[in-house]
Length: 617
Image (cartoon, rainbow, N blue to C red; front, side):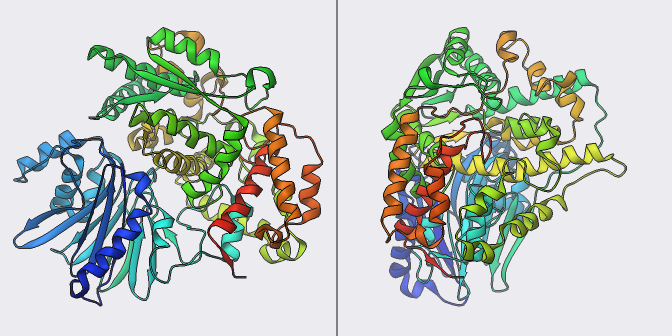
């Protein structure tokens, strides 16, 4: 895992001022130094400048980037961020076609795959990745991103010059790129946030390369194209055959993702998803004579203040320790205090360049920093709920009727926080409906499917394109802020595509959420662990944290120079401060309840201030 940045211009000869442009590319990449603490490099060609910050995971002694291969006197140079899980097979295939290798790192495999297959290269890759290729052979720049957007890539076009970076902060080093927020950006923050429209960079003129897409930039301009979309197809296999196929996919995926030349661990909550990944990983490492390290997360005071809800029925800690004992892992429980959690809100904004899931983001960043003290790579159970249909809105019909995003139904609360003039200008209801409608129009379905079948496909697509994207963005930014690589086995495109066409009564046999996954994992864990009810990523229930948030937000309201005054209704925010919150009623997802709304507003204010954002309506 790494970070990279650069720019391309086919109307200018960059080599005429090579060191000037190299210095600019290096400045852009240095903003991403947290992503790659193990090395750096830069290179300039006639029409492209690339700079790279490296986190060494495979072949640490080699694989420096940017990496160049010369063919018939012409150079092809890559800057790459990711992990390729089918590197051995792809390397063997390329060697059989005459390609040679000087390193054991997957960067060289991706570069040679591009040389061999050109625009068809992404379809050959199984992994998580974003990369840029300065192609001197075809005289163009090639940008690419993995199928579900696990790895980020943003870009902007300024006066026919394309600038790109792994994170938005890298673009702000490029001349003429400024943090400007228009109507759409405000609608993203207040209408959809902490989710974000796929491809939308929130700031004016900044875009995100869509997951499953590549882009070409040359003298003809910029073109973005899709190489992967979910497809609808009949599912002819029996339930027993489906269970067996899924089990084989899970075993293969985790096995592939254990490849690393650095210390590796798993996140273990004691829930179904992380326990299955951990069980497979522990079994494989045990065969190698190794013991797996595992981590769970807890918050100060939760043993006293935790209150069960329909979204979070019990605490993780006892379950995590039980799974660890069962599997024989070296387990560690990490703690986050109220003050650490409140302070993490600001660091999380800088990590994402945007307000996010408040303390849900901040706590992950805090925990990842602790994990990084001993490990460089972690596997987690993220994405299973989106792919297997584990969230409550898959099972409660009242939570999704096609008119609202199911994880963000209380739009009235969001609108009430805005000052009346801004509320009228933004028309959040219209904006959110437009974005939802755009997605629903593109849901793949089969002819003749009944309304309920179509509805479940809609939920699957919405969750993978939106909610999963939000969690993957959070996972990447909060882990890479610490130089920790987190892998997501359930996000393997083979599993996602297969499950998209599995009937709902197979995914949820007898009405049991994720029953298919539970049956596929039978024998890996005790039945009581496999049948545990869903419990999401943990959060604090300590009222001391809420008190800190209210104190900080009151300070912001008293200071008339704080930028958020331009946007919010002070009366509405004061009303939030005067109430006690129901921790079991989230306004976004399953976890973001009243305290997280206060934290989100604090993040928005800090974001406006720290990035010196200009609002242009």
